[in-house]
Image (cartoon, rainbow, N blue to C red; front, side, top):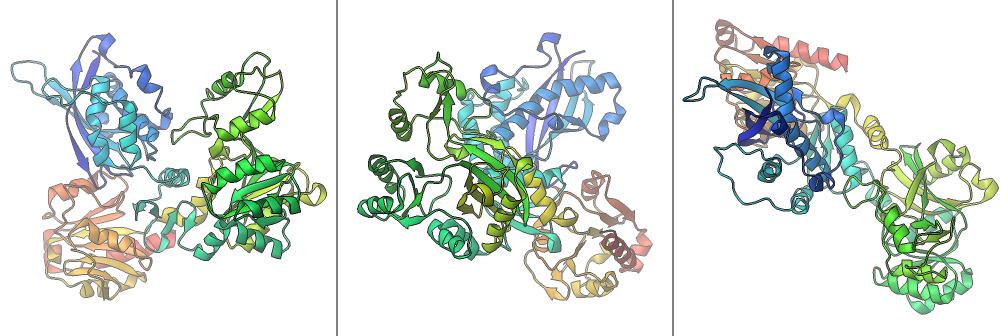
Length: 628
């Protein structure tokens, strides 16, 4: 019989449960019999249009409990719960939240219903979330949208517009597209993530971890980043080492800018020396009038302006990842092609229908708008917004080719000449940048710059990954984070640990020949040093060791852990050693992970020989170290 899912209650878990790689929200759902037409509520079209598509890998998956269900019951259960999973996944992706996976059906029960002979089937679901508390706050909107309230639940305020919901979630999203892509690449590779600040994330644990702020790591020089960001100083350095660059002069005021243009010769480029993303850039300025208009726009954004000789050619962004070619993108300025029928306004509207264009975090390109620069360019081309454009005529609406300004990217990675790769690699090496975006202006990327000419107009120390090569973020993770960034974690939850000292425990772990981070009853230790960073029974004690680059393995040897209510502090523990006195609610956390090795000691062994577990732990740690 078809069923409809109705939510009875929700809860938030700040830790890790149910084999998920992120914290989660849990939902208790009743599966209510219904007519076939009501079994799977459809998302309203006006909502669906504003949400990112959902890849198939995020579909709801069954947990171990499904082994006890017959195939038809399993199918009915998943079908009833999938609309809820789909909306929660699409909502998070649309807000710019990276996700490790879709929901999982943890368990189900047939719950007796008073006064009826038919029990009510209930399911426990878990949904991974980047910020589970915030997702739980918008759950009423989700249930309003799907009609997913249980009749016994008192509904609150009416639904808010989806734009408001996405705005609320988006405020907690990672800052910048690069960070979102790197986080997603980490989740896809089973690399653990710890948030350090709003913009900085740790990928991996202990000795294997790396910090990243967008594409900067803790190893990147602040001097190199500042030098690349200052276009005047960057130009001077490239010129000094013999890299091809256009002629450049400072333009601090209008009189100086006008004289610099006369000295360099038109056409020229005017741009701020201290801004990124194409802000304030005007290229191809042909005369003093257009220069004056560009100067007015740019000086409103920055007081530090520079003037360069305009180089004829196409705009190529060459991405260098750790001394190797990552991607090449040809960036065309925003514009439209005439068809002999449509006006400029109509052509812009048609171009913005491209599903790749949008303001959402997942959009590959920005919409084209008719701003002051666009109107200026239209007048220069003898056009206006209401003029029909001839067939095959290209109408430029921006001078700069940045994607953030509506430009269109085309992938050229497989066609670049080796000399041009070597030039970009040399530029990145001169600036001591591990990841760099080298902007090269030249006629044809398939031919050598030595043959056809060209010039480096900018070098970016924090370039945006090319939408045409989404695998770049994964290449960065593969290069930076070794062995999935994981170190072995062992939990010893024996009653006999009470009263033992951390230094005494460390003495029995020396045979592992590793720098062990230890959570003991009397404190937190790295080797023989007691860091005392936090209470040993709290999840923060373990996290303090995962943040320490000295730590090669972690042993938690403390029976009184305050973990069950919130979940585990990590998504995976390699080995747990228990005895019959270990609390069932703690054991339950480890049993949810089938990869966790579990060993139970007898009461006599645990009480009589308090360190009987140490040889097994050291042997396990040595084996893990040898494997890696």
